[in-house]
Image (cartoon, rainbow, N blue to C red):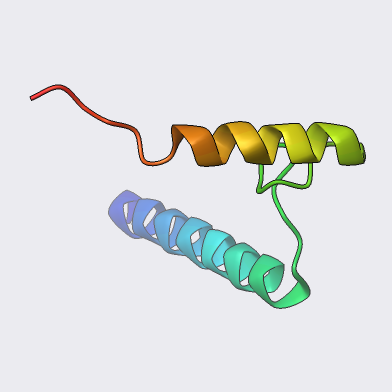
Length: 63
């Protein structure tokens, strides 16, 4: 019985996060300030972070 409850909770959590991801994708919402080059409602910060992000991408690894 308790195994069924645990599995049900896992399935509900997966469905919730999958639905949340699909909803955000459809509505175009991003997850906070660090998403993309938009910055935190500051156009100057967004352009600086975009420039820095492009300069660092792709990161080189040793080896």
